Image (cartoon, rainbow, N blue to C red):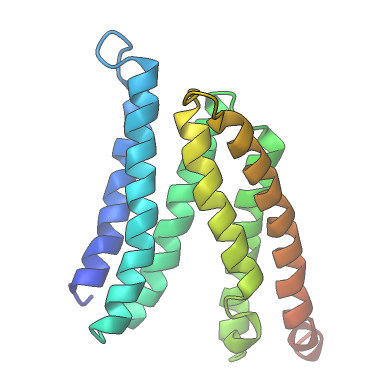
Length: 189
């Protein structure tokens, strides 16, 4: 495992997950709900920024590695899944939203693993649709975590719209990946 700056940032995202989830388990007499929301939003947003930054840094410093390529999407999926479970527990999203997004991540990860085993990983490489889905999630989740109105701006309403757009892109991108893998699936049946 190469311990370079990009991989350390990815590991930091994984370390942030228990802190991110744990903030909601503090006694309300210690940390009020609005402060819990703020801390969770800052932690999630920091993780989302480091997700972009570690990839940029790896390419810039030419420190890409197989370990980093494996760990980066795992860290992303863990952070998003943790956030969705927290939001579900707080009653800020529906169970169906969490199920669709987490289920798609598991299904596409399994599909990519299978395609890699067949030597056809390029058929399910990250697409523009997947990037749009991720971008929508990375904007929706912090708004739903923060939840409290900011003057006339209602983060909960906007976050809800964005998370449903993310769900739509989640389904669309999953079908896109299945369509791309289908010829190989048929050939190796």
